[in-house]
Image (tube, rainbow, N blue to C red; front, side):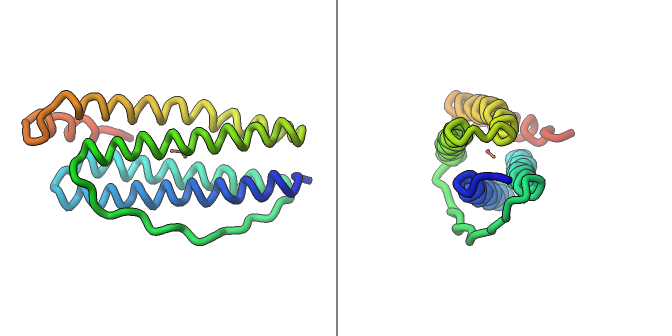
Length: 163
Ligand code: FEO
């Protein structure tokens, strides 16, 4: 049986992952509106990954005989000044998610919850990848003029995600 403190913290993390999914879906809508289908596709794939993260934790609680308690998901923002501002927000958001995963892992160590430690190690590895991918896009956007053709080239490249 999973410790109650661990169950509560994992339920909170499920909510954070679902909020991430909602945030990226809102960003996908923003890019669709701006006629940048490649950026929108990247966000749609990212949104799907966040839902998968939530479901991984959902299934983990079920397997451990814990109780899944879904909470209200905060409404995401709907507008950003520039694509660069938007991706900087993604980078900040993912850094917060990483900190939250680390806190969960520390709790799993304190509670000597070994199965939770194993599952959370997957998330620790995943966050390294997520932060790297986003920082790469932030740096590329910083290199280009927001109105230049390079934006369209980046849009084309990001549209290949998941193919
Ligand atoms: Fe599920 Fe982007 O962290």
